[in-house]
Image 1: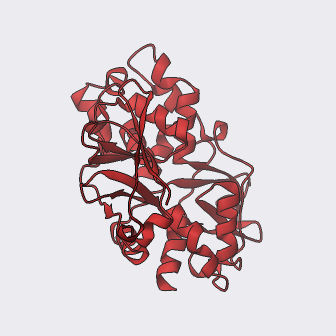
Image 2: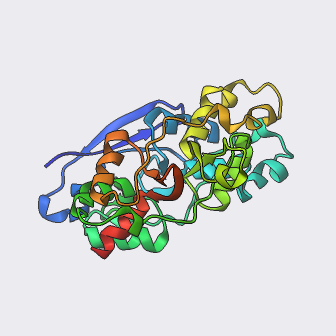
Image 3: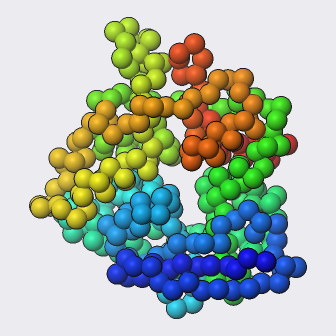
Length: 313
């Protein structure tokens, strides 16, 4: 039986010690066979600025927030929460009202200001079916796993479930599960505008379209893709959080998506098998792709759509 490891990032931003816990096999539910037990967590006193750095360092879209003493889950923070804070949604009020538009001061506040405190958790005894139900009922992409002492011992994501069970969907086609309502934007949209679109519509990724004189064709021609992680990575690479010289971040947030979008896009056809799609997700470390037919975008399919397909199976 493998050790359960919980890695807690300390206030300074350095990794804390690794705790090893051994559990009897008969006490673990099926979910522990696919969950990650190497969990990076942060204390509630971590700044928003340093939280973004930890996410990019470990290539995670979300981080559980735990009590440093007990290891109990206090909250969870996601890339989308940070985008919301940067101007995409209601958490921007922290900058506008509480800090009087002082961005420099706001990014140094504790992450507890923006984390979700009403956290959905799973027991380490949970089944796969229970996990699927909780993910879909709550429309969440990851669930922290706790033991009988409410201590964090793992985390399970949509990707864990999709990649471990997607092979069952050998006959299911993408077109039966994809979303045909696709939110898109253009290369000239500023980063702040993309944050608003993604947060307000609960999107982790948005296709970039255009490049045609005929507007009806331009709205369907795929030029690139931007994800929430791309946005936070861009802000880190620009050293926005460290090198801000004044109270404003407008210059960076006004950057056009054409400068950060991924143009080497992986796409699938409507008739692609969902099982094969999951292999594409795994091979390319991605969680969603546009669906293209005759060079036009006709849909988008994500890990969550795969979870829905598995639930019906």
